[in-house]
Image (tube, rainbow, N blue to C red; front, side, top):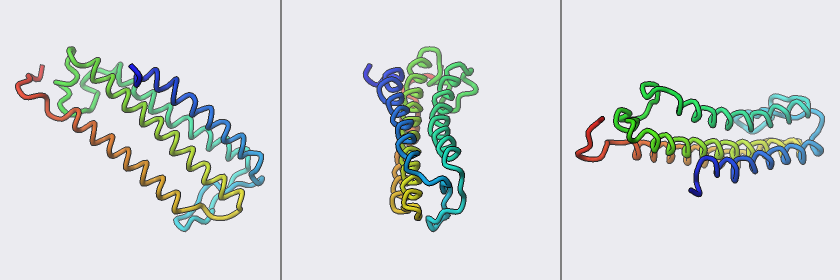
Length: 174
Protein backbone atom coordinates (compact mmCIF):
# COMPACT_ATOMS: atom_id res chain seq x y z
CA UNK A 1 0.00 0.00 0.00
CA UNK A 2 1.41 3.37 -1.06
CA UNK A 3 0.19 5.17 2.04
CA UNK A 4 1.10 2.62 4.68
CA UNK A 5 2.50 4.08 7.89
CA UNK A 6 5.86 2.51 7.13
CA UNK A 7 5.96 4.14 3.66
CA UNK A 8 4.90 7.50 5.08
CA UNK A 9 7.66 7.39 7.66
CA UNK A 10 10.35 6.23 5.23
CA UNK A 11 9.37 8.33 2.21
CA UNK A 12 7.99 11.50 3.80
CA UNK A 13 8.78 11.84 7.51
CA UNK A 14 12.45 10.82 7.55
CA UNK A 15 13.40 12.98 4.52
CA UNK A 16 11.64 15.91 6.24
CA UNK A 17 13.67 15.27 9.39
CA UNK A 18 16.83 15.46 7.28
CA UNK A 19 15.65 18.71 5.66
CA UNK A 20 14.87 20.07 9.14
CA UNK A 21 18.40 19.32 10.32
CA UNK A 22 19.86 20.86 7.17
CA UNK A 23 17.64 23.92 7.65
CA UNK A 24 19.06 24.53 11.11
CA UNK A 25 22.63 24.01 9.90
CA UNK A 26 22.09 26.40 7.00
CA UNK A 27 20.62 29.19 9.10
CA UNK A 28 22.93 28.68 12.09
CA UNK A 29 25.85 30.19 10.16
CA UNK A 30 23.80 33.29 9.32
CA UNK A 31 22.22 34.01 12.70
CA UNK A 32 23.44 36.62 15.17
CA UNK A 33 24.91 35.38 18.46
CA UNK A 34 21.72 36.38 20.30
CA UNK A 35 18.55 35.05 18.64
CA UNK A 36 14.98 36.19 19.23
CA UNK A 37 12.99 33.06 20.02
CA UNK A 38 9.65 34.53 21.02
CA UNK A 39 7.59 37.28 19.47
CA UNK A 40 4.64 39.26 20.80
CA UNK A 41 1.26 39.67 19.13
CA UNK A 42 2.70 42.65 17.23
CA UNK A 43 5.50 40.48 15.81
CA UNK A 44 8.19 42.23 17.86
CA UNK A 45 10.77 40.00 19.58
CA UNK A 46 10.41 39.78 23.35
CA UNK A 47 12.63 36.85 24.37
CA UNK A 48 16.09 35.79 23.24
CA UNK A 49 18.54 32.89 23.52
CA UNK A 50 22.10 32.22 22.49
CA UNK A 51 22.31 31.08 18.87
CA UNK A 52 23.36 27.51 19.62
CA UNK A 53 20.75 27.05 22.33
CA UNK A 54 18.04 28.50 20.10
CA UNK A 55 18.88 26.16 17.22
CA UNK A 56 19.01 23.15 19.53
CA UNK A 57 15.70 24.00 21.20
CA UNK A 58 13.89 24.80 17.95
CA UNK A 59 15.31 21.71 16.27
CA UNK A 60 14.46 19.48 19.22
CA UNK A 61 10.87 20.76 19.27
CA UNK A 62 10.57 20.12 15.56
CA UNK A 63 11.56 16.51 16.10
CA UNK A 64 10.11 15.69 19.51
CA UNK A 65 6.52 16.83 18.88
CA UNK A 66 6.05 14.65 15.76
CA UNK A 67 7.81 11.75 17.47
CA UNK A 68 5.40 12.03 20.41
CA UNK A 69 2.49 11.90 17.96
CA UNK A 70 3.97 8.83 16.28
CA UNK A 71 4.60 7.25 19.69
CA UNK A 72 1.00 7.90 20.71
CA UNK A 73 -0.24 5.85 17.76
CA UNK A 74 2.10 3.01 18.67
CA UNK A 75 0.82 3.14 22.24
CA UNK A 76 -2.81 3.24 21.10
CA UNK A 77 -2.30 -0.04 19.24
CA UNK A 78 -1.40 -1.70 22.54
CA UNK A 79 -4.12 -0.15 24.70
CA UNK A 80 -7.30 -2.01 25.55
CA UNK A 81 -10.31 -0.81 23.56
CA UNK A 82 -11.79 0.81 26.66
CA UNK A 83 -8.90 3.33 26.65
CA UNK A 84 -9.20 4.32 22.97
CA UNK A 85 -11.53 7.29 22.59
CA UNK A 86 -13.42 7.13 19.30
CA UNK A 87 -17.15 7.28 18.65
CA UNK A 88 -18.91 3.91 18.70
CA UNK A 89 -15.71 2.19 19.83
CA UNK A 90 -17.55 -1.03 20.66
CA UNK A 91 -18.27 -1.41 16.96
CA UNK A 92 -15.06 0.00 15.45
CA UNK A 93 -12.70 -1.74 17.87
CA UNK A 94 -14.46 -5.10 17.79
CA UNK A 95 -11.96 -7.89 17.05
CA UNK A 96 -13.26 -8.15 13.45
CA UNK A 97 -12.54 -4.46 12.73
CA UNK A 98 -9.85 -3.43 15.21
CA UNK A 99 -6.85 -3.96 12.90
CA UNK A 100 -8.42 -1.94 10.08
CA UNK A 101 -9.54 0.81 12.48
CA UNK A 102 -6.13 1.09 14.12
CA UNK A 103 -4.38 1.11 10.73
CA UNK A 104 -6.60 4.01 9.64
CA UNK A 105 -5.91 5.88 12.89
CA UNK A 106 -2.16 5.24 12.54
CA UNK A 107 -2.13 6.69 9.02
CA UNK A 108 -4.10 9.73 10.19
CA UNK A 109 -1.77 10.38 13.13
CA UNK A 110 1.29 9.87 10.91
CA UNK A 111 -0.05 12.53 8.53
CA UNK A 112 -0.65 14.84 11.51
CA UNK A 113 2.93 14.26 12.68
CA UNK A 114 4.21 15.06 9.18
CA UNK A 115 2.04 18.16 8.97
CA UNK A 116 3.22 19.28 12.41
CA UNK A 117 6.87 18.88 11.39
CA UNK A 118 6.29 20.93 8.22
CA UNK A 119 4.45 23.61 10.21
CA UNK A 120 7.25 23.87 12.77
CA UNK A 121 9.90 23.96 10.03
CA UNK A 122 8.06 26.90 8.45
CA UNK A 123 7.78 28.71 11.80
CA UNK A 124 11.50 28.14 12.40
CA UNK A 125 12.24 29.64 9.00
CA UNK A 126 10.16 32.71 9.83
CA UNK A 127 12.04 33.00 13.13
CA UNK A 128 15.43 32.65 11.44
CA UNK A 129 14.58 35.22 8.75
CA UNK A 130 13.34 37.71 11.37
CA UNK A 131 16.63 37.28 13.23
CA UNK A 132 18.80 37.63 10.15
CA UNK A 133 16.98 40.91 9.36
CA UNK A 134 17.01 41.84 13.06
CA UNK A 135 13.36 42.75 12.69
CA UNK A 136 9.92 41.52 13.54
CA UNK A 137 8.24 38.25 12.71
CA UNK A 138 6.26 38.36 9.47
CA UNK A 139 2.77 38.11 10.97
CA UNK A 140 1.04 37.67 7.60
CA UNK A 141 2.99 34.49 6.94
CA UNK A 142 2.68 33.34 10.53
CA UNK A 143 -1.10 33.75 10.51
CA UNK A 144 -1.44 32.09 7.09
CA UNK A 145 0.65 29.14 8.24
CA UNK A 146 -1.24 28.84 11.52
CA UNK A 147 -4.60 29.14 9.77
CA UNK A 148 -3.63 26.55 7.18
CA UNK A 149 -2.30 24.15 9.80
CA UNK A 150 -5.42 24.45 11.97
CA UNK A 151 -7.72 24.16 8.95
CA UNK A 152 -6.08 20.91 7.88
CA UNK A 153 -6.17 19.57 11.45
CA UNK A 154 -9.91 20.37 11.70
CA UNK A 155 -10.54 18.74 8.31
CA UNK A 156 -8.71 15.63 9.47
CA UNK A 157 -10.70 15.62 12.72
CA UNK A 158 -13.89 15.95 10.69
CA UNK A 159 -12.84 13.04 8.49
CA UNK A 160 -12.28 10.99 11.64
CA UNK A 161 -15.73 11.85 12.94
CA UNK A 162 -17.26 10.88 9.62
CA UNK A 163 -15.18 7.69 9.38
CA UNK A 164 -16.07 6.61 12.90
CA UNK A 165 -19.59 7.95 12.89
CA UNK A 166 -22.53 5.67 13.11
CA UNK A 167 -21.88 2.04 12.27
CA UNK A 168 -23.40 0.88 8.98
CA UNK A 169 -27.17 0.35 9.05
CA UNK A 170 -28.10 -3.05 10.29
CA UNK A 171 -24.68 -3.60 11.86
CA UNK A 172 -24.65 -4.90 15.37
CA UNK A 173 -22.30 -3.34 17.89
CA UNK A 174 -20.41 -6.58 18.49
